[in-house]
Image (cartoon, rainbow, N blue to C red):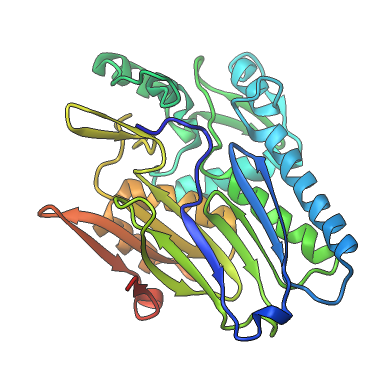
Length: 336
């Protein structure tokens, strides 16, 4: 059983260059947003002190977003919304406004397969408990009445709930937004070649210094410590959702934290979904949405979206199968 809130890196980032000894990246890692966040800067035209200062500013922005969007933090704005949103509408700051509006957009786009109002159902499962258990089916069905992104009341920058008992969980989108913002801070301060990796969700920006030399590796979902495959990426964003992040096994059944908003139970058709997109917020949210859809419908969905690619791992007849969208299929290489 895995129960820790700290999600280990799902995608490993490697930098390969014949002249690696001449390129000394500056790296900092901190524990934020319930995971390890790593910022790596490859720029060579600034002092180490200046680069570390800029990295610190990027981390400050991530911390600020975490303070607003983390529902595990009782003093966060999202916790305040969860406690009071059914009584009156609450004014959102710019961070929460952007994340909620983007959540609604992606919920509409994915026909409800991504939904931030799953908070009340997620509380039933409590994957962080030392002794997790499968909730009573009757309780799940009752709580599902509180899960529907259309029940959010949004009036300008004010947010509320149309039904008492609703809860918002931003765990599948806020991290992506924080990554985007960290990269923006780096760019604004003159950093042009860097990576921000938050528990496997990552974004990279590139110059000629590193172009063509980066590999993004996807973990094997069943063999701990092994890689499944990789693709190259200069600039872009990647996010993975997998059934091996937080889970428990009961009566030989794996119950994981990626819930289907329509059933209240863990989505069972995929093992791992990796999304490649321009921004990390979109990749983060769509990795969850496609995981819920399953390999067939998920692939149809991705192929109909511009500038998005995906790699899906699932089981068929007891065997681990992978499939990839048109734009990445010929660029994805299995390990070994």
